[in-house]
Length: 464
Image 1 (cartoon, one colour):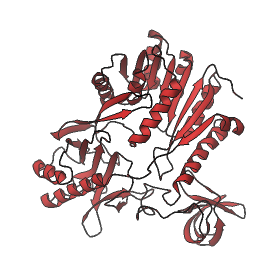
Image 2 (cartoon, helix red, strand yellow; image 1 turned 120 degrees about the vertical axis):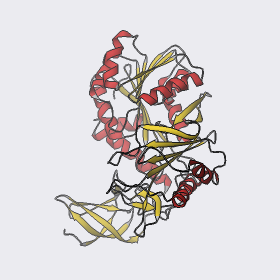
Image 3 (cartoon, rainbow, N blue to C red; image 1 turned 180 degrees about the horizontal axis):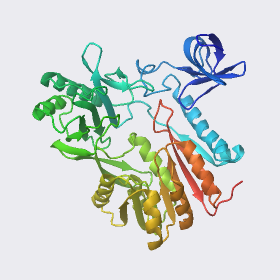
Image 4 (cartoon, helix red, strand yellow; image 1 turned 30 degrees about the horizontal axis):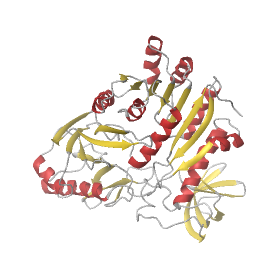
């Protein structure tokens, strides 16, 4: 196999990055934009010892799962890897990836995994679901200001004025900011030179409340003619709730800086979620807060986590990686006491304020890394009945896992955005007396390969 060879393949599967997978002469070939079930001609672009990468040349026989992408930028943009795959098939692929990771990494038997698996929870409408648009600003080759999204594995902006998984309003607001930039002669930030002013525009929406925040990320600490910026944004969103400036003068590709200040309106917007239990919880969300980007699926995800926690009003729940308290406060409505731990100080302040907002006095919050704070405080407090974890993509630190094991809760509810690290952590917990009872996959991110999984582990269970 050599670079630029043309090969005919039948696509048998799809990778974690959304590429089609085919085989020829014992070599695995990954093909961007191919769909499982396609018969296609591909051009080899990179050759490794046991596998190759290829570009799609022609679809000879289209897969029954192949559809026309809703977005004309789908092939260039790095945001949606599998928009060319029918939504039902997307759910099947994601469900299977989680199951495979539980078997290959977690060490579970496939028959057992299938027996405790609950049906994947898909979206009612897999477009326009994001409540946050985070859009880089740059220049095209002619010097015009553009906005869009980075191409796959690059910092090259693919211009877009209507991302199909964001609201049309949020994208229109971004272009209203560009109109302001053109009017005031403000240049976008250039990563190569470190010059220029506006780096990103972030739009957050309270899907239940209708409140909108615009955050302008700036290489500096001010913007000229703020009144003009407000006026431009109000041509799209007349009831603008919040305009904030985020200061980021770092010479790297981290999007948000540490300092944020209000230019107009409030420092945070409010949203609410309603769970299947009937409980409604309100949250104030600041520019830097972590808040699930899919409001409707968040309600379903947290409802499932609450169901798995099986609370009856007296239990003590510890919520690690608690963020602004979204899961903590969902649990507090049904628990005796909830303790939340989070490393981001502003998030802890948000969590405390959100507890007060909802009239919940049975939730306490501590700031620090879970693997540091947990060992420090657990011996001074009563042991939890339930531990709830929703860690970042890297999963739980082994120190945190070992402390959880020492605390001996009856149940551990684990919410994960990466089923590979989830499976790794479940294996560790299994080796120390906890057993997987059931799990559900929740599709938070349609047309991408990302998903969420919620798992129940119990000390009373038995592995089959």
